[in-house]
Amino acid sequence: MSEHTHPDEIAAESATERHLPDPAVLADREDIDYCEHTFVHEDGDFCERDYAGRAIVGVTNDAGEVLLQIHQESGAGVLPNVKVASDDDYVAEAVRGVSEQTGIDVEIEGIERCRLAKHDVEGEDTSIDATTHVVLSAAPVSDDDPHSDTDGVTAEWRDAVPEANRGLPADDDVRLFVE
Image (cartoon, rainbow, N blue to C red; front, side, top):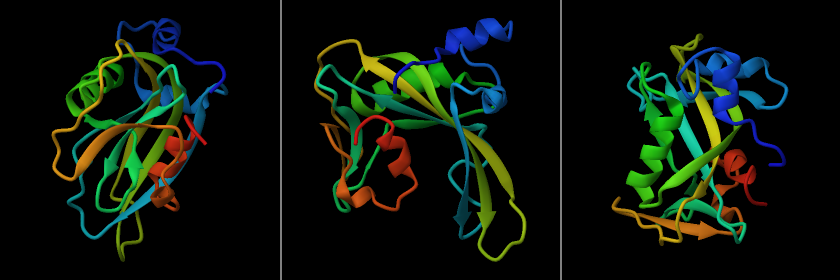
């Protein structure tokens, strides 16, 4: 993460008042990592069905640690993230989601990655849906300690990627912020 592309810069360039326009415009930008990933589901009833995508937020503090939601049973950690409806703004939903999930209020600093997420059903030949994941960088606005109200999940500052993340889709996103 060297230089950030701030969502307001993209909004100004695309002449819209939204903080982040249709994420499809991010695919052609050289300053934002673009990738595609196929998620295979057992059936067509998956968590992002009927949503535009997901806002994923890498919150880093002054110590260089990243805020992770740690699944206590597996030890795997993911960046705070929230599903985004087609008429919602990715940036606004990201700020709201981090606060609700971890108790940490943040300021969005930039856009790091845009991922086209294709959704397949096991045994089917074609994708049934595609959503957009936007990975944003952010900083906390206070020194509050994170917390989680979700059973089996803690919110923690970490200075390394959890070992349990190896091979998981979230691993690459976490690695954008810590090694």
